[in-house]
Structures are given as C-alpha cells and as structure tokens.
Length: 394
Image 1 (cartoon, rainbow, N blue to C red):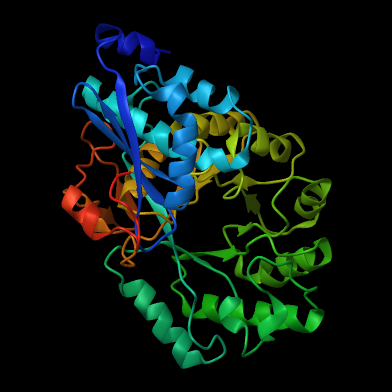
Image 2: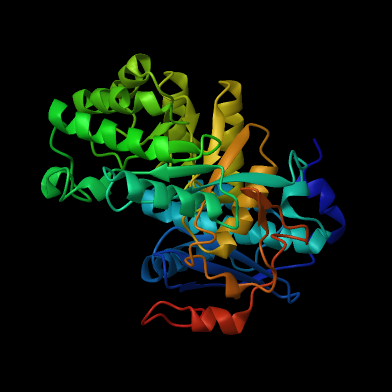
C-alpha cells in the first residue's frame, strides 16, 4: 500500500504548522478546529467537546505540533497519543486536529481524503436519522401521521433510530430513566409497554424503512435482556449502548442471549477501547465517532481491527456539516462500513458554514469530491454560528 510519506515526498518539508485554533458552534457541544500553515494552506476539523475544553487541550498539544510538517500525520498522531499522559479527555481534541491534518494533506496533494492511501470503496454513504417517534405511540392516527412525515422527507430516509424517552411521563414513569444516571430496573410491566409502543410505530412505518433501537448505556443485565426480547418483534437493525460504557464480560453475556444485533462504540476512544469488545465476541457491530475515537487515523485503525473479526462498522455523527463531510470520507474509505448517523435535514448541522451543499438522495450522502474534505468553510458563517460567549478562532 502506498504510504502518505511516499505520496507527499515531493512536498516534504515545504509546510510548517503555525497555529491551531478552535471555536465552539451553536446547536451542539462540539468545536471546529483550524490548523494553519506557513504556506497559507488551512485544514479544518471538528472535535468532540466544548470550546473551553478543546482550547485547553490544544495549548497542551501545541509543543507536539507547532513548527512540525503537517504531512507527517502518523508521527504527529502518535506523538499526541503516546507522548503525553494517556488521558481520555484529550482524545476528542486529538481527533479534531487529525481530521484537519488530513484535510491539509488532501489539499496539498489535490485529492479527496477518501482517495488517499486506501482508496474509495463507495461514493455514496447510507444514512440513518434520529426521531423521537410520534407524540403518542399508542394513538393509531398519530403513528400514521408521524410515519407519513418520515416517508415524505425529501432526503428519502431508509432507516431511523428511536429511543423510548417519549414514553416517559405518559405511558412510563417520568423518573424511570434520567440522563447521566443508571436506570432503575425495567420491570416486566414497563417492558410490555415499550415493546407494544415500538410495534405500533413499526406497523405504521413503511416496511422499506428499517428501525434502530436507541439506548444510552443506562441498564443492568436483566433490564437489557428484557429490552432486547421486548423489541425483537420489530426486527431492528440493531439495539445500541444497552450497558455501561466500559467493556466487561456482561456485554458478552448480553450478546450471547440477544435475539437482535448488539452495537456499541459512540463513547469509546481509540482502538484500545474497542478491542476487548471484539476479542471477546461482545458485539455484532461497532459505531465509532471519529470526533471522539481518534479522527481519521484512529478511526481507520479501529475499522481494520473490526475487519479481522468480520465486524461491520457504522458511524455515530451528531455534529455539524463539517463532521458530516469528514464522516463521509471515513465511510467511503472503510471497506467494512455500512451506515452513518446524521442530523442533516433537521436544521442542526449549520449547513451555511460551507459553500458546497452536501447532497442526500434516497437516504444516501454523496461523498464530496474536492481535495481534502471537499468543502470550503465560510468564515463569516462560522462567526455567525459561534456558541454564546465563544472567542473567534482562539
């Protein structure tokens, strides 16, 4: 396989990193990254954290990056990962910097990121979108109206993801689950309500649209086992993040007993946190977020590990139009990739921050074809979309 060093040999030593800046944007707690060079070529990325945290981490990382050749990406990645305390909060910042470095490399070499090194396996990326479901999961008319809205969406969604939080406070107790806390045990009575609600939504939805069941690492093993059995009749593509985040053998027990595919990964970082899930046969699929898992470099390493275990890769993606472009290149260059999450079409991705329009047809995102990420960031729009109290590119 041709290495980046070989591709970039004619440009070796021509560029130096002069500054690394960040600004958090509104609509999500994520932060844009800008890496500047002395050649005037700028790379953009997105980091999985709020502005103050990312800027603090950037100051810590600057000694490993400033005045270095931005095309020496693997060496810089390893410096950021290994030549400091291996602290998890640094990884989202490293992820954003890595994406920006690959953007620079693509611009210097005149190629899209997805065509560097690995080549493109695909030019369009299947997407799925989040939905809370109908207001009342037990009203046939509301279920049908919600399903019609999904069917009529101009992006032509072919898959949706739903949690059952909309049932809290009506069909289920409001305090059954709280964000950031472990759930109380899901009792058989609650599981029957949840199962019936999903069945009602499935019955209203076009059979050509697949469903995914969304959790956020809330449950103990008995509750998780009850939930996978409760939703099995709708035949979901997968159920995600049932158990607490770190690996334990409980994940293996869950997968062994589950009648539906088990997925996790959006809160895991770097290959080292994904590997025990694969080695121990604890998941059917993984879902890294390249803004948290190590950028392109970390994401590709994770996907290559998964390929050894015949595990498919999906992508978590709740960020801006910049993350959507980056995720499209990651997906296009990953052999075992199957689908990406997105918020495109929901008014949350700040699409005016780039000149180009990301094209979604029949539920698939077209991979940008320009050099680097294939997008042109509009600085005026970045300023207009800054989170409250944020400095501009600090």
